[in-house]
Length: 340
Length: 289
Image 1 (cartoon, rainbow over the protein chains, first blue to last red):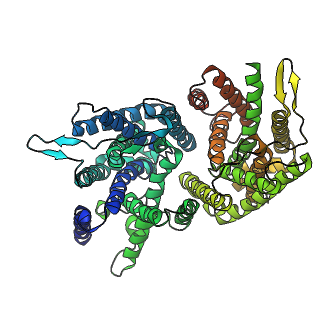
Image 2 (cartoon, helix red, strand yellow):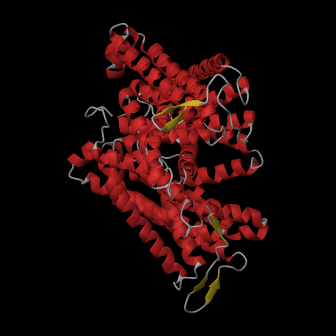
Image 3 (cartoon, each protein chain N blue to C red):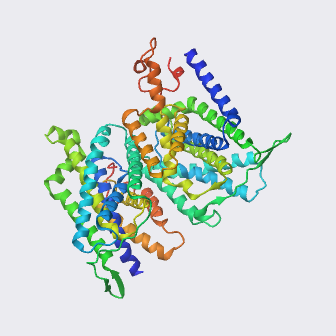
């Protein structure tokens, strides 16, 4: 294990946490709002990448689960449902996981890559259409004016409506979720997933139930996406059916690939970079799409490992280190300690 | 109901015009081109720039469609050389996402050039009002779309199954390495297939221009329909795509009559049912996709 890189990672995480926590003190509320969106989109992208980068399943309809979570939370908050907000988040995540498990049980029976991609894409569009025609869910106009709740913590009440408290709440929950995903990815479960991604047949030969692991991964990814959606609804306070459309589903892909799908933290980096690109071109609708598309093309053509991959290569160029090819082969490069 | 079926056939033929290129390029290159719908839309915009809101004769309309096809085919050459060629040996997922990136590029470019307004275009003046079939009135333009769809299908089907070029293409599709050993210029044929598919997209854009309003949303709605047709028909299978398109057109049109509250939903339901029942598609062979 490389102690230096471990310390460096810890330092980077600490610096990032400090930066995030103190953000409202030194920027404008607009930036705080955008950073909140980045946090939510980060865990959304992480959940997609659990499927793409670590299980080898390419889905094009991940936004369906996000929209599911958003709408479930939005409706519950709007109707002032008498349920503790934290409990609501848990329930929505579990329902999202259940929804995802049902979908997965059907679509994963035919995991021929392209059929899976298009089935999931259809799922997103179906949900988009249903929401668009449903009166309870506000049809095409969506639901607006979703209140931010008050959390009763027994000893004290935290009003998420006030000041920046919801932002800090987001920081906390998103870091917890990301941490949990990281733990899952690098634990035994994640290693089985990665071996399925690299060679499903051989993994099955080693006695692993490939179908069950894929379904589990799909379920977890759906649950986390629903949780991201649940956090999103009170943050933005207005949700529309576009949350479930194909472009929304493409967002985590873009983020994950830009940052590097082989790296666990890649999607987070990608989300942040994309937010900056989009923010700087927010007034030019066509141009923003063009630039994002070109960036994505260049990444796929030139650096399929994304920004984290590039960083990794640059780091390895420094003297006194093993060449990454000799050390790691084609294994994911995020955690060096996994290799003796 | 009879009207709904006739109308559905015309809608289905329109979908087939888009699905043809999509399934063709998949059959040869095994690439699912997400940008196909947008190149179709660019073709429609090009034809629109040439003829405007209403063309004065059938000839200018057809010529404009041809020009649109050729321009989009040139875009196809560029795409093939800059993107697809470099990704021949890369994992499918990355190619799919690359074509998704192309989709965004095409969408951005078309918004920059033609703006975000939607236009409605009427059929060229050459067409009569329509004719009666039994007690049902059929507009001559939808009859024309149907005929165009059938013609393109017959041409493609004959071309693939009967002509020398088609047979070589089939050979390349089934074993590109072996085809290369036999002295066939495989990269050139791949480019040819891409160009043909892009030409079809652009041409379809021109032909279907008066069929619906022209707006940036056009591409995605056709793309999704074409995807469904391609999937139901069996990936890479032109015949399958043709019959699936017609089936879908009819299902959608009839479901509008039967279930008017959820337009657009029925085709997805049909597709999901189909994929679970026959994952290889209508005419697909086992292990083909």
